[in-house]
Image (cartoon, rainbow, N blue to C red):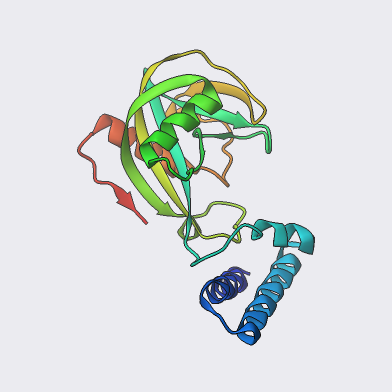
Length: 205
């Protein structure tokens, strides 16, 4: 299953790059065909409707590169901030996709405010993970880099929203059920390691 998903991703990347740089109309037609085949394969592998799969890639153009997911670790009194996703009812570090025209530091501060109501500062990079190299579930058709930042708590009050149903601080030994498509226990452990030892090395890959 994982090998097939990797092949689908490679076909999609070849098609996207070909559409971006090819000028010949016949070559372009072949690259469109490759994209359609990769979408059919992914639809078959995931049992998702073909239209839904094609919509995942409708805005993807140019040379294919990984998407960037930003996650924040905010620790107070030896407890870490987690938010509960309405989508799956499980808990995660606050975060989301990086935005264009925004630095990673700005993005992760914004995500914490939007998802929890808390103001944080001084983001410190502690880890960069290739999502495909770790047991996040389910696997995605997109290639994703996850950037984890340890942030300082400043102020604010918890505020739920259309994406988040609950907000809280948890001890490492008493974590709730995690949204493992977004965060793993190991990610949270790394946050505490850097919190307790600021000279810890950045985790890469």
